[in-house]
Image 1 (tube, helix red, strand yellow):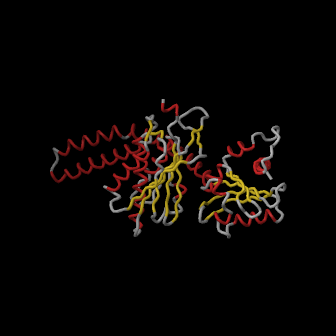
Image 2 (cartoon, rainbow, N blue to C red; image 1 turned 60 degrees about the vertical axis):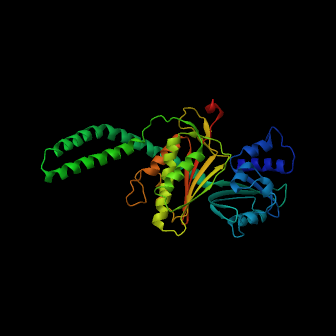
Image 3 (spheres, one colour; image 1 turned 90 degrees about the horizontal axis):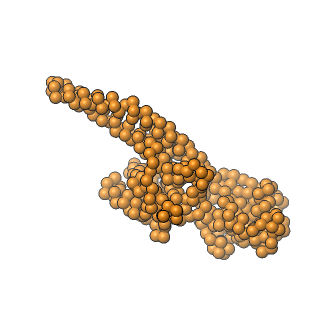
Length: 386
C-alpha cells in the first residue's frame, strides 16, 4: 500500500470514528480530506456509504447526506468490477488497485477510472476506496498538445502573412488591370486569377487568427452568449433542429472575451448541427448546458507566475448525432484534422487555442447517439472586478 493511501486511511478513520489523529502525524484530518483532489469514500460491511469527501461528492454527483442514504448497488449495477474489488478486499486482500475501469449505472456513467482500495483493520468490514478519473489527465494532455499545435500554427501564420500576402496583392491587382484590356475570351482567365488570389488570402486570414495578439478580457454573461449563438443557429444552419437548454441561473460571470466565446460556441454548435444533418437522426437535438462545479484548476498560460486558475464554470454543447469517428477523437483539436469531406480542420484547433488563451480546458466525449463538448472556464475574480 502506498504511503498516501496509508495516510488517507488513518485520516478517514479519525473522521469516521471522530477520534483525533496526533498532530505530529496528520493534523486537521477533516481539512486534509476535504482538500484532497481525489475522491475518497468509505463503504460499510453492507456497502453503504459512511464517508465521502467533497471530491467524491463531485465525482458521484451526489452530496454526502444523499450518499448516506444509499448503498453501492444504488449507484452501480451488481456486475460492476468495483463489487469484485470490494469482495476481494473483504476476503483477504489488504489493498488492491485497478485502472481504466468503466462505471455504467443508473446514477453514474464514467470511463477510464482508476481505483485504489484498502481494508480498514480497525473497522472490520469497512473498505476505503480512492477513485480517480483518468479522462481528466488525458484531457490535460490533449490541452497541452492543442496549445503546442496552436503555437506551430501561429508561426506558420506569421510566415504566410509576410511572404504571401504582399505578392498576392500584386498578382490580384495585375489581374484586375488586365481584365479591362484583354479580349473578352481571356477575361475568364483574369477573373479566375483574381478569385484564386482572394481564396488564398482568405485562407491566410483564417490562419492569422492563431496569432499571439493580446485578448481583452471582461466579465461575460455566458447565458447571453449562449442565447445569441442559439438565435444565430436557429435562423441559419440550425433551422429545423431542436434546441434545448439546461442552465444554472446562479452562474457567475465568465472572465473572458465575449466575441471569442461567441466564436467558440458557434463553431461547436455548427459542428453539432452538421453531424445531426449528416447523420439523418429522426429527433435531432442540440442541448446547451451550464453548471457550477468545483475541483478543476489549471496553470494560467497568460501569467509568468505559478498561479493556478480555478475553472468552476462548465458549459456543455451536446448533440444526439452519430458520434465522432474513434480514429479522429484523439487528434480532434490538432490543425488540419477533420471528419468532414470538405473540412479544412482549423475550426476546432482555433477553439482549443481560444479556450487555452482563456486559461480554460476543453474536453470531448463521444459515442453513437451522444457527443459532448465540455468547456471549463474561469469565473470573474474579485481582483478582476476592481
